[in-house]
Image (cartoon, rainbow, N blue to C red; front, side):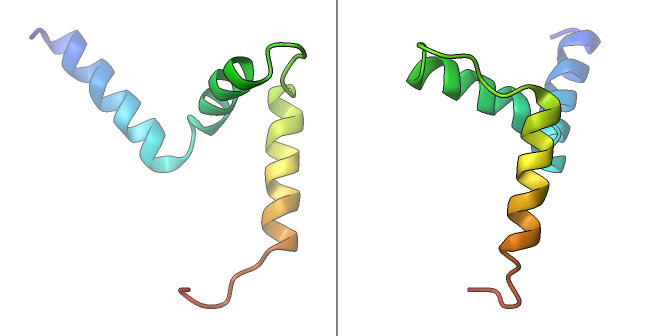
Length: 62
């Protein structure tokens, strides 16, 4: 494998690890499961996710 391929794989792994790729995964799943309407915009997605996180705070591990 060349260096570009390795860097691309590392970047994809890093984006998954940090959560940066969450919107990409959402769009892929949404288009597969709900082809009849458009997914949320990226801005709407991150706002909805932040709202969910604020309303569902977990204080324990389980």
